[in-house]
Length: 140
Picture 1: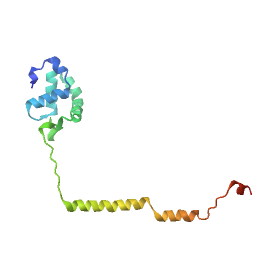
Picture 2: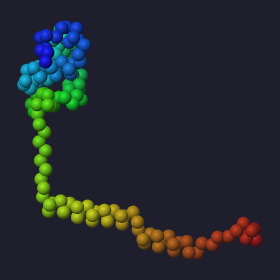
Picture 3: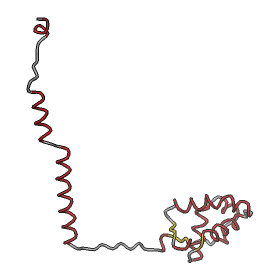
C-alpha cells in the first residue's frame, strides 16, 4: 500500500478530506482527536489556519456520515474496521414469555378499543324507527 509521503500534491488534492483522514488513521495505526486529524489533513494539503478554522465543522460532519469512521470516547476518532461491535444477546425464556404474554394482552385490549359491540347495538337502536320511502310516496 502506498504511504502518504509517496503521494504527490496533485494526488492528495484529488482525494477527499475523508479519504486523506482514512489514510492517516490507517498509517498511524492509532486513534486521533478530530482537531489533530484535520490539522494533519490541512498540513498535507498545504491549507492555512484560516481554512482549518472555516472547514473543521464540515470535516466533523463528513466523518460522522462516512461509515468508515467511528467516534470513540473523549473526542477520538478511528477507523471502524479496527473496532468490533459487541452484541450481547441474553437468552432468558422467562422474560421472553412475559413480554409475549404482555403483548398478546395489549393487542386484545387494542382490538376491543376499535370494535365495540355496544356501540353497534346503540346504532341499530337509533335506526329501528327509520322508514325508507319512495319519491312517489313522498309526493303524497
